[in-house]
Length: 205
Image 1 (tube, rainbow, N blue to C red):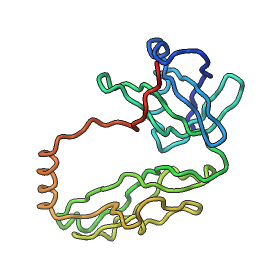
Image 2 (tube, helix red, strand yellow):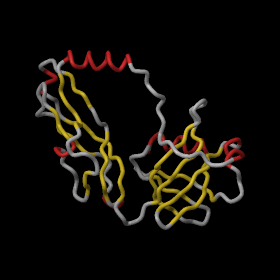
Image 3 (cartoon, rainbow, N blue to C red):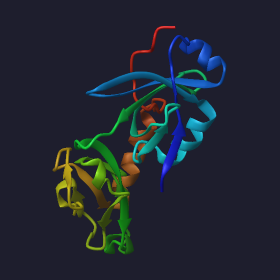
């Protein structure tokens, strides 16, 4: 699926004024480019909810350019939980590091035996050419019994896709029910921090 978003060059507009007008200030960049832009907040929210950090968003600019990009960082207002600033990384022909979602297929025998499937990672970090970005990476769990796990190095990656994370990192496992209960108890005892997408220096007002 293709995701497109209208973007506008930012000249003298102040970030605070743009936010009050329902717009989201940002920047588009790569090693050869660094340009301030803004997008309509409502449109960004709609597109980003679908594309996230996993899919290419084509920025449509006033001068007719259509630049493929990945959202690298979104700074959120801590109180209102609204985006305050967005970084778009403009793709070229050079390989890029990005997260690709995982799609788990098959039925683990260990689950039929009473085990619990733990999806430790829902995506993995890879290095890939923009021309070869897969929509997802399939993970076959049909060989997992209780106590078994798959690691990043066990995944079958599409051609042109290279792992860019610790190959020994566990991706999915089938664990005994008692282990899940212990993990749940530990999680409840530890206060969760609010979810944010990237943390960066806030732009001067």
